[in-house]
Image (cartoon, helix red, strand yellow):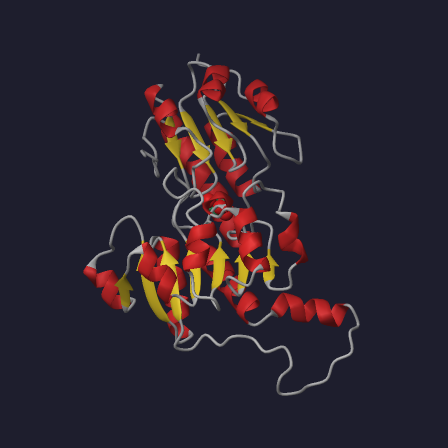
Length: 323
Ligand code: DGY
């Protein structure tokens, strides 16, 4: 008789997903309430057929080597997979999967929350009240920037970028986008959007929102030079991956009034944040909460578990990453 497949989960997942995994094999969940260190991760995955990973796990050749020849699937509980050396795993015939779709709305909602927070100074306003600072209503008090008729420049009009565009349309914004490739004419029409080059978008957008994946081509896409190319009164929103923005350059640009403000859910060296950003009133920060709703995180974990179950059952992955 075959022994059950060994399934390793690198950080706790909701019960609904655990149930799917228990039905598929022998499950070991990390007992640590923190990311595993690389050596702990390698030790934990020895002999695994499947590993359910998080975006902070570095999945590379050393990981695959440690897991051994029985490794069949790595299922990342995230849509992004910049933590995984996909070609290295594919070369070993290990299937890599992710969780697209289920987190689109939650991430777009959070993006819009941040966009409103930074343009209407919500963090600053809350800090003012909590500090007990005296205030009274007057016509010039804590004025923000209105969104109506302003241009939202979306970098990467994929599923999340499109969901952000739909929300922005409801707020009366105009939508421009740039990216590696154009979307179909139907999508452009539905979102009433125009494709611009990166340079044009930076020149025209009142708010630039980043939705491209992190790749060698997008690392530090926003840097001192591209920040200088933005409108002086513009805002930057980042809910994709921290390293798309050169964080020290952003702090420099904000300090020098090159742009008006920034709202960031992701950081270059998570969980660290460039300290200067934390001192600035025109910066809104949240700790990687894009997909953080009960419903969405449950769906993400369930999809990751179903990917594992499907591969182990010999039915192939539901969401294979091939890049
Ligand atoms: C993802 O799925 O890539 C997110 O960053 C996690 O919410």
